[in-house]
Length: 446
Ligand SMILES: [Zn+2]
Image 1 (cartoon, protein in one colour):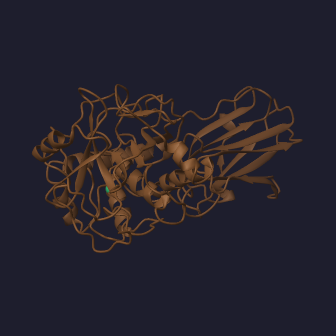
Image 2: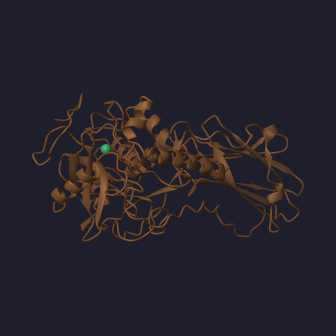
Image 3: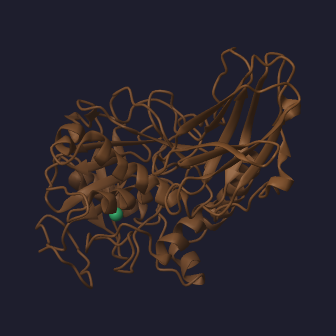
């Protein structure tokens, strides 16, 4: 069923590519949406990854200082959770899985895979000090940026950040991850993807949802009809000679969606049954695992509420060959983290058991298509002009197109070092060097 999800998403990708032959704005007006897309999207939505750049990671020659900055605001796990939750908020409404991975601190940009580079996430999150007009920017996803820089997020570490107050980190994380997934700006002030930080927006507006579903489709339908104990899928035949069972194709669609399985204890058992539900490395699902015996009595439950991508294990002792146990997998809470891919592992012995391996989403580096290819928020001529005008400035540089969208161009180094990005503006104040600036309908921060 993970493959079915991928197939569905690839259909969406094909649809988008077909639409790219005409202007994006026209296509969206057909659907009466005010959301826009930035011309990029991930080729393998089944597993989009993100990572936190360690401090010192070079962003165009400037060292990232996200950890130093945010650790002064909140404990590391607390501020990182704002980004994790933001990723899960998008996953909750659309047809992709998003997953945290580690980051080795190699410079942003350079040579590497467009998707699934083993050194860091598809979307890397870092920070540098920049002009106060900005809260942050995101490098656009493939194919606009064709290399490992695609989708990377840089937060303005010169701003005053807060959690659950202005400038609210979760609100901005949702916005920037939205760009990294392919969302452009919305004309609706209440949308999270509005150009300016107008007020805290810790959830998605229907316009944001419509935009992300245009890119990736909605949450897929439940691929398996096993929502009750009586329709449990029997996993017994997947048990190997060492008493290990591995099943990688689970998917929870929403908080009310239960996934039931059953398994019979093999003769090889040493007397324990270790049951593991894994969304780590597979999705941002917060897992909830329950083991039920053949008399339909609950043996035990373990869950990881508000942990976006986790592995929970429950061990039953004193199991004997021939007994049947039922396993229920579901989400630990409603809202963010209530959907996504998972796998099940059952071990009746003491042999080591590898976690469920993720789907291979590797896409090799491609040339950037930001200037010469399709780029809805700026024409190639505008982009070239912007590159010339701003290429020597430090930090992100902005130019507007005629639709009021701004796209920024940043330098990641000499030579082939430019990348194309979307920024979230702090205020509508007009820095003198910015050419044209749209007036927002409403804003709070002067
Ligand atoms: Zn933006």
